[in-house]
Image (cartoon, rainbow, N blue to C red; front, side, top):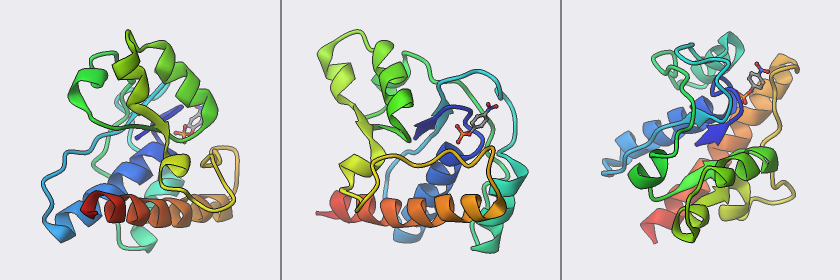
Amino acid sequence: MVCLGNICRSPMAEGLLRYKIRQLNLDIETDSAGTAGYHIGSKPDRRMIETAAKFGVDISDLRGRQFKSTDFDEFDFIFAMDKENEVNIKRLASNEIEREKVKLFLMHVDYPNYDEVPDPYYGSMKDFEFVFNMLDDATDKFIEMLKK
Ligand code: 4NP
């Protein structure tokens, strides 16, 4: 799961996916990263931690890291939260196989009406809750796709 800073959207997506995978006892490895290096080693944004906790999901142990080209070898799916991040991840790919691993998360799960997860960083707690709900639905859809 990849966004810009790796402190709002992608740790929330990772946290939700990890929570659901554990509940279902599935053997899937998850991780998240940012295309930018502003928040390497940082906890998720306090507003994202609080929103997640309100809905029973703990993301406080996650730490920011930057996406790196070896991630193409480690992961089968690389999901971008928005189009700008999708372009910037694809720039790091060295061949077509790597480029094809990169998808817009909401497009991959066929999410209605949206193709990008909006950046809540300069927004309000309502925006964080919107992102939580969107990623909760999208991760449910992704898990249903994996099960099939
Ligand atoms: P994220 O949100 O990409 O969802 O983690 C942002 C976090 C930090 C910044 C921008 C977006 N920033 O400019 O520091």
